Image (cartoon, rainbow, N blue to C red; front, side):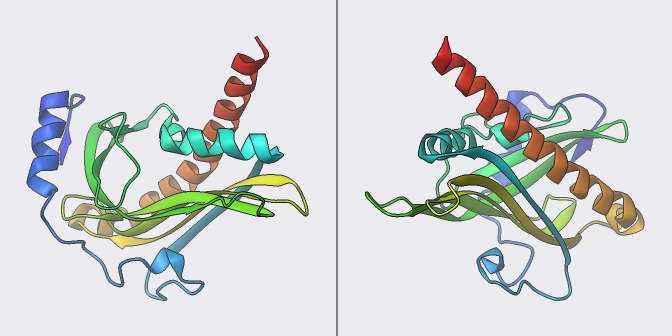
Length: 202
């Protein structure tokens, strides 16, 4: 769905209600959890260190829960405070090429590995595309920490291909935009981590 003006909250709600019970537009669902994603999709992968230490991991986990990785200026998640849980349906509201685009996704799975005393921790989730989305595929967001290096990493893995005629014609731009999102999303997570540190220090 696209429009010249930013969709209202009511428009987004009706859009999500119309998409909520529809099927995913790709197969296999859940493939971002597989080391070898489907070969007939374009793959995007971004991985960046965003902190050090166990406390930094906890801040990164909270940032993902708030969808801070989407605070990039030209895209956002609606509803703004959507919970990270399997089956949750959300809209990516993006402003590109002079239009506002609504893209529907559903959370496929959630990763939450944080046992007391463990020497690693991971938190993240993947969502997949529903029929009203310019692309077809799945994207996984993850933050992880391990005691050996003490590093906290932000990791995005996505596979996709065009879903609409318009995006088939503009596939190079779609791929460029996806790569730009990866870079800007990692930068947004870094800003979030720094902002949280500033709050704690004040």
